[in-house]
Structures are given as structure tokens and as C-alpha cells.
Image 1 (cartoon, helix red, strand yellow):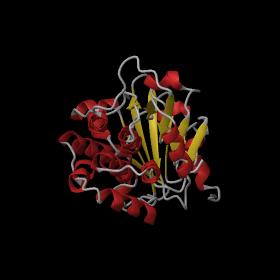
Image 2: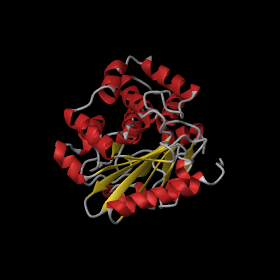
Image 3: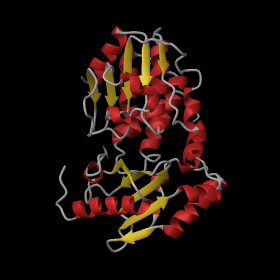
Length: 319
């Protein structure tokens, strides 16, 4: 369905539970918070499901919105979720029971009963903004998390996915009187000392390939412990390597407990399709930004992602 049909669906139903994805970023959290507040403004009962992976920074946008224990929804909606495999453990019970998925990922698997997909949008927040506009509900409380959703998914409007529509949506949200300067500083111009030290370690241990155009770096548990970093200190860490002159494509491998490695790939999409790279390892996302998870050792994770990158670099880039 398109955004107008999604708005009609939301107006016709009630008693909502809104789901976000694993390792939630600003887009999934901002969309859930903004949509939840918009539905409440319409007089609906709406809650967001608690996400155990949320950092304090992102989780703060859901304060006062999370569902109480025992809440039984009539309508379940997911925001910025491309596949049910990306749902956190807290949402596992809702697999196969999602009524509406609102998303912008080309890798969307259409797992919900209804899907509102606009794969040309930089952020799912742009779609939620359109839906809220169609519903005729908007204020600063709704606009603030939606601005965070959009700004964080396009790197504060510098990533290649940024479009004129992205700017129009952000401008309309700014017109609601949101504290956009404080939001931009909070998300893009503030780093903890632990994060700064972690970036130093990443630079020390990163490797360059293909004439310096491909950078691969690991963020190990030992590195995190060495600088006293927490998960919040790694927010958007995948964008860091792309700031190096000459680097076109990056893979950031983050170690987790139990031999799990989560890999974030960022590429110059017209030269290397990140979705195809990660799909080789069971992941997905966007042409310029995708992710996957592998099990094993650090060396195996690095070898796997390099093989996937090499395979795609020798193939013609396709849409």
C-alpha cells in the first residue's frame, strides 16, 4: 500500500503496538516514537515495544511510550524493519502477527499482512512524516523523533542517499519548532572520550585493500575494554572509516559475545552494491549501506567479508 492507504489503515484501527529492529538506530526508534505520539494525538491507544538493544541515547526517545506488561494489542506495526529476522528477542512472539510494516529497505521481505514500502527514501522517517501529514497530526513532540530518524539515516544530510524530499521533510519538521541545533550536536558533534580513544585504536588496526579504496576494521571486545567503551560509544561507528581520504568502501566488523561478529558495510553505491555484498552472508539493507552477522573467529569474519567484497567488485554493478 502507499502512504495514503497506510494512513487510512492507521485511522481505521486502534490498540497499537509498534516494533523496532535489533541494534536500533535513530530511524527505527525515531519512527516508532513519532508514530506512537501521532496515533495518540488521534485518540488511539498506542505503545512501542521495549527494545533491549537500545542505547540510553536512542532509548530516551521512547520514554513514556513503552508498552506495560501484559498489554494485548489489536494492531501490530513495525517501523524500519526489512525482515522478521531483524526483530529483537523481545519481539520474537510477534513474528507472523505483524499487521503493517512501514519501511524503506529494498531488501524488504513482505512479512507483514500489509506493507508500505518506499525504497527511494533515505529514511523510514520520511514515510512516517508523509503518513502523519496525511493524517493531519503534527507537533513538536512528533516532529522531534522524526527529525532524528531522518537526520541519522542520512548522516545529517551528507550521505549519498539524501534527496530533495529528505530536505523537504526535514524542513517541514523544523517548522514545528523542534530543537534541531541541539539534536544535531547531540547526534553528530558530540563524542565521549572513550569513543575518541576507540577511533584511535580502529585506525591503528585497520587494513586497506584494492589500492587503498577498501578499508576493513575490527572493533573487538578487548578494544572496547581497553578504552572503557560501551555500546553507546559505538553508535554509527561504521561511518568513521569513510572519512579517510581515498577510501570508497568500508567494512566495520564488531565483535560480540559468543563468537558473533556484526558487519556493517558502507560503499560508493555506483561502484559496489552493499546489499549484494551482505546478501552473500545472509544480510541485507541498502545499496550504499548494509549489514550482516557471521559466526566464528575474527579472522573468519574478515575473510568472509573480504571475499564477498572481492566477488562483487569483479562483477558489473547493477540496480
